[in-house]
Image 1 (cartoon, each protein chain N blue to C red):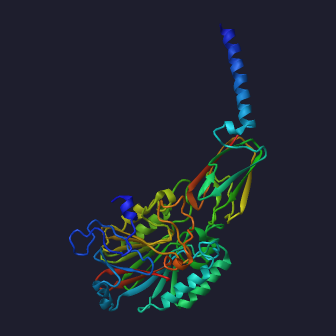
Image 2: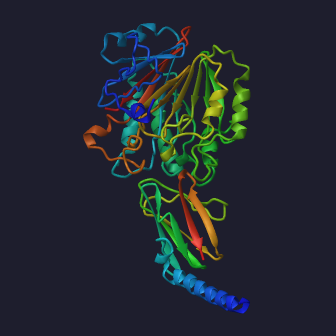
Image 3: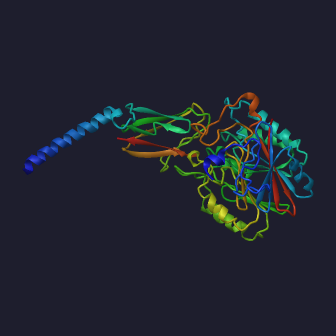
Length: 328
Length: 119
């Protein structure tokens, strides 16, 4: 797969390499993108991902399976405190995300926030986000983005969101038979490098999953993508591959990241990688601008390029469905 | 012959010293980097340092000015200096009192790297 194919945007969220006409992407790549209010629904079953555009006849299939299981939402990159032309109202768009969550027909049990809660690590920024997210009335699990650990090596972040967690704030928990692992890859970054987990965290991870059955569905979440999307812009994690090597034996692994302010998806064997929308501002597609900075889009399009990810796990099927929903 | 060589060597040494002095006074001769005597600026824009290599004289103060909509942190690779997060239009200065090459980067966007050469 070449980079250009990987980054081709597919407005319908349809499979691009369906050689057997069975809905399975044999080449292991597809993107589920939600542009201009359209959506794509991806169902992971036994590590194989299927995708349907909203409105297609098959799109209703997974809904009929919503017996038991587990539903949660991922939000990311709130950047509270950001006030530049790319979005002068990050409070308004985060509130819109809360409204979207509260309007979901199947209410999530909890929320994952994959970092860059704040823009400048100021306590008032964290306070504002906490206050707005209270409107969901849900338990929220956080991992830090680089904007959350700016001036104190993440001390304030740990005190607020990761008090009883390991090292710089990594942890795991179990919900309805799914094992969740929150990782920190924004600390101690080295000149010229990418995101970093570090040896201490890698050792912890290896030990953390050792006792689990291979049939346990795993969800890993971290701020910077654990897979290399575009190293020229630092969109990847140096030792992400090593972390994933500890998860090879598991039948269903879902990796949820933020940082790049756009949805992107890749499937490799039993591992599905997915990045979420930001709730704050848009960043350019890899290599499509001189740099990765905030991108101003027409005001009437902004909310169609911001959003959240709704994840549904159906018990007994080891299946996780990922749906990107825009704020439009 | 030997003596002549020594004289030639001395002349060469003097010529090199003059050349080095010229580079210090006219920094544009040193590969496009710039010096402004006691102060010089690096512009942080579009996730790059401009210029990425800056040559200054000893005791020069270098100022980094952030022109991005995203904060950056200026940090030397060896831990000698590190700024707080610089938001848009904020700046950070450091005075280099010893000759040498100082590699630095943005500690939150580590792909951004630069060098200050102090002569």
